[in-house]
Length: 259
Length: 307
Image (cartoon, rainbow over all chains, first blue to last red; front, side):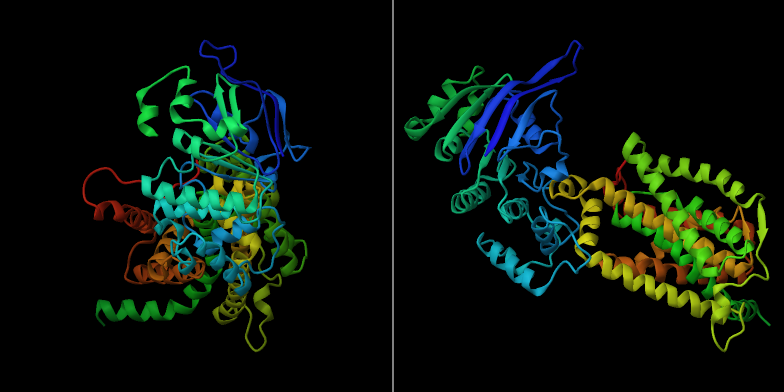
């Protein structure tokens, strides 16, 4: 379970360009629930994800994962409980290291690292099996450096890395936004498959309204650092792209075109 | 006798001495490679850590400590110096190069304080080079044997380490600090530990050098950094850096080849004062080569180093 309690964050406090990024934001995601976060630019989506992952320190408020208060935990400690796929494929993987080494780093996310050799036959076989789920042939490229992979392959790898040790919370930060439509579709399908088969508590930020309509148990719309609207249950099943766009305070054609 | 014969004969006669020297200095090259390549942290501490190791070792020897204890103390001092550089960078967000310059400059005073004077003779004190059975201490052969064994041991240990879970995590910090942090790796600990390790190797080089040459000098560090960089570039040109094995071989191969080249230049009659200019020009050429090959226009972004 993920809880964000009255999270508040103000940038440039006391200056003319003071900006309230998170305005006493409250959000609860039940265990196994898949929440989709939408909102216009500057609504606080990234600030919220950064606050949950620990890279943004809150002015006030609390973050709880499965009931444990992680507000004061640095990023690397929280990583034992949550995994994140970034928008930029470059950010989520170590480019100068091999596919297998990246998988190893992900596997050890929640464990203490030892002086034993990292890669061994058992692990390599396991990685091969996990990567074969994607159907991209990555299972045969374990010794390839990640910098030689395409953006879509890197993002797919990031996804498999993120879910490899069943994190308590999975954060997806517009993780298909930087990919071409076909690749984005492959990565999205793989996401849905793994999230539903592992029943992961997932929070996905997206600008793609069609994704918000098609996927997830609940749509959460942010505006000015607050939750403006939540759609769940029956209502979520019947919602359309046009309905969603109707709720945006600032409407642009780009939203419709992007969907 | 012609020019070529005289050059060759004096070069050949110098090969053992140069080999001994290059094995000792390969630790400095290693102390430069680890921050640069494994941690993407351009570090200048070695210019101060090398004489620091020498000073500590010299003082310990004069005080009657065993040569191994003297080296151990030097390693510890170098480790602390490296940790300081990394900490200054991480805590105060000071550029890595500036952090290195600060520590290196401060170490000059520290080294003078440690020795109490600018030059300290350890002649006549026992050294690790006396311990080779069947060889007379002080001769190049014994230095080659001792330094060679240490080099092999360090190489094997590091190769094993960088393949372990901890070593892989440290390399990830160099490859992508954001990603490393998101994978639960403590970036501070890995950086401080890694730069400390590099400082320890530079200091090891200084300590072995002092035992080899019979004195410690506060100015012995001047130029080791640029020499080390030149050696590293040569090594990487020979071994490549695609795998951990190749990257780790580069400092040792580079040191051995580079110092033989220097010896060849000197044998050919190059005036010693010109050496640093020549070395600097060489490093510049190696660094400029990729952008020259691409032709005119701005240099494309190569690797991302931390700032």
